[in-house]
Length: 112
Length: 116
Image: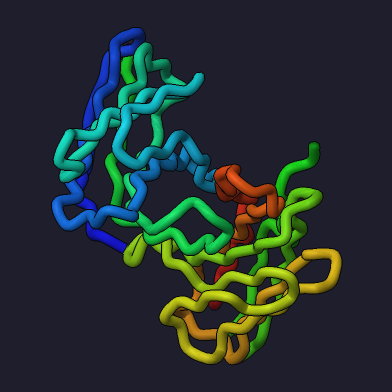
């Protein structure tokens, strides 16, 4: 699985968009970008994933650059409940082989 | 639909003892993965079971083992506990086997193990 680099921490005001960057310059053609988050004292929660097209769901949007070397997770209207550690993960495929390699993630603090 | 459940939620053991943790996946899921989370090493993959077979293994010593039953419930065992085994142990289930669907991992709340 390709290595990812994320900033260790970010702040965001409640109601504003939170843009969390991730670098994955060694990503290969068959590797997907996944985002999970972990709210304090809970298990990680899946947010979104993508291959090369931008993706959007009810939680967030994922923007992947054309060269696929980086991506941005966007929480359009951050709330206090979005305070968590966000993990960007790159791995092959979407099937049932379920090993996830977590990095150190970005600690997002949403403030009033 | 009930989520992933793990028992017990908290456990205190002493060095040299062994421990067994249990995980019940979401109904219909066939894959169960185990992770260890510590402040120093973060979240690390232990192993994955699919249809009662270990399909993937992380880089942990042989003291860490697991198994999966025919109903997909899984247990992990740690023998000869060391102080460094103190951690949050997370279980995740995925995989309904439906073609073309992404099998996201659903995590349980974890078992917090303290080794004294």
